[in-house]
Image (cartoon, rainbow, N blue to C red; front, side, top):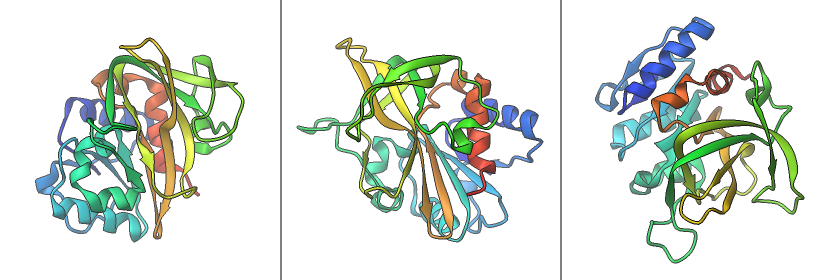
Length: 232
């Protein structure tokens, strides 16, 4: 099931997933979401705006009861500040754009390079081809820079300063790398993608996905498919 409020991107993703896997894909806007999502093997959430309470609670309940919830791109963007239960459930915090420190910012247009920080994980590795290698230094640990497989997504967005509130509950899969369009400095934050247990289910988040073009990259679509089919 895909629940979304922007459709060119999700039409591209639906076509790609169906051709790669033969999955039967249902799609709806917020108003059409069923209260019981348990019949679905996975739910992909691609909602840009503020969610109403019915959708918010349906998604949370679905994951807690054992579902696979895959959140893409702006499912964890600044609009969700007005969905505090969602932010608590996902273990995330976003400061307002005018905050004095760690302010939320959208960097665009940039090449958002998805950096594979967890090469042995099924989501990052199964049938995924990386066409680049990049020097990357983790933003969250005392580590030295290293060379990692990378997947550049051109002319898209990168979100700056998504903050974790749940310690080490998340398993980080990808780093987000770009050149800041205003300062020319290199941005590296371990927020490109992660997984997290939620009750009896799992949350998977992938930060890219702003443009229809993002969902025309076979390796990115395979990562999304892996997020659905991964068996913890």
